[in-house]
Amino acid sequence: RVLETFPLAANMAATGASMTMRTATSKSAVNLRQQSSLCPNKVRASAAPKRAVSRSAVATTCMAKELIFNTNGAALKRMQAGVDKLASTVGVTLGPKGRNVVLESKFGSPKIVNDGVTVAKEIELADPVENVGAKLVRQAASRTNDQAGDGTTTATILSAAFIAEGMKIVAAGTNPVQLTRGMDKTTKHLVAKLKEFSKDVADDELASVASVSAGGNQEVGDMIATAMSKVGRKGVITMEESRGVENDLYVVEGMQFDRGYVSPYFVTDPERMSAMYENCKLLLVDKKITTARDMVGILEEAIRGGFPLVVMAEDFEQEALATLVVNKLRGSLKIVAVKAPGFGERKSQYLEDIAILTGGTVVKDEVGLQLDKVGKEVLGTCAKIEISKESTVIVGDGNTTVEVQARVKQIQRLLENAEAEYEKEKLSERIARLSGGVAIIQVGAQTETELKEKKLRVEDALNATKAAVDEGIVIGGGCTLLKLANTIDDTFKETLDNDEQRVGADIIKRALPYSLRLIANNAGDNGAVVVDQVKTSSVANFGYNAATNEYEDLMVAGIIDPTKVIRCALENACSVAKTFLTSDVVVCDIPEKGAPMGGNAMDNSGYGM
Image (cartoon, rainbow, N blue to C red; front, side):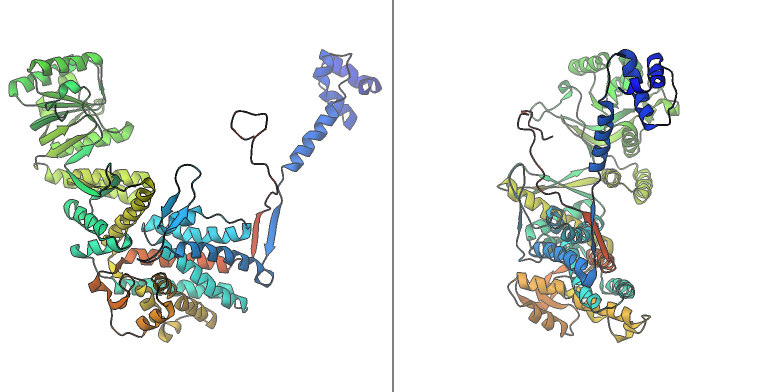
């Protein structure tokens, strides 16, 4: 009908000419050009409704946002409700007598944990405004965990305390901008005072730091202290699951990597299925060995010298590998073939590390060395090497100490500039391998649920010990925060610009005892009485030991916290509270009502639409 009304458009559609019409009706005709040319006798009247449907579909995808203004403090009060719910949940885990939290798992058994950041990450509230407040405080816990590895519960409690005390003042009409500036200046003052309170951690105090962080588990503390004494304070201590139910610790001396022999025919101890040699030479090749002819010169040197040889390369072709196996079985060569650890650029770095440890040279084309033309001058030497199916351990002979130390310093500079967590981990492993050892703590438990909870405790203890080595220690149990509150006196307040900033300092002072009060409450004591008792004491390290419900010298009793953990918790809690108190409008999604969660009833694929 449209084409009959406008013969010019019909003519254009039939001939396929491209011309733009200015009217809405002629545009529809042009859009039907291809269809009309294929079927000129049929009218495509459905095109216009299709365009209308597409417009309506686009319109329905635009989701509205809900705006909650802070009229009479409504927005901040709802956000604070979410903060309080999160803090109350996380707070039950604080202290040596803190309880656990059960986390439902959609797959597998539930998790029962005592770790603050793990609990915080699991909390999602139904009210979107309350959920915004909970997410803000969760940032303090996550950031503290990233920086110090422990103290996440303290950071959460301090955030909620700063917000609770600040809300009382903001509700009375105080300018929140000046208030938060006063809080920020006070926090910087407390960090400076914290460094004055701190002392370097002694070797016999490392176990106390670890056991306090692990919830009073002395066995874990002793194990971590023993590991540090064996590999050094800067050494690498890793954690893995034990096959049994007992905790265990073993130290791998020398350089270890996850690559074993290429063929089981290379073993020298059939009972243990391992190859072990002493005073062994190493040939390091940064490429694939395709033929045995390239190695003839080196193999002849090994036969004449009678020394065992380990060939480490990217890969081995079947012909080259068969030649090595045959010579090993005949007894003419003491040899083992091992694939180089790592991939790509990291593989080359590992080979260079091994070369420096053993005093050898990596054979690669980039430096003009070809395998068929090099002699025994490129071979490295190790005092002992043990190769199993899945791992290799190389113990150096001690003649390359200077070169190894220079290499370690070079990697440490790379570590300082690295940003990615994975990259930092790998660089730390390289330093530990070159330095002489890696300690591995094996965590065991009766059930999988207990194992997960125990691993989190050991991980916290390990991170707390490393933090104590970095920045020292202070007395624990929340008493350091109480001592810091006493330093916010009139002398400090006079340095602030105005009265509103001084009120901000008072907010910090009133909030710092919250941590000790909660530790005492979790231990079954009256928190207010405990805070008053500790505050009135003039003894420097006097505090409350929640494990025994006694007042004593906490440094002597071994109740100590890493300075770094307290500092990070304090700074991150203040940062979140400042952001919270200066907010005035919340913009969030309007929750959908009755949205179907399942898939199509006729769909048997198991996936939702």
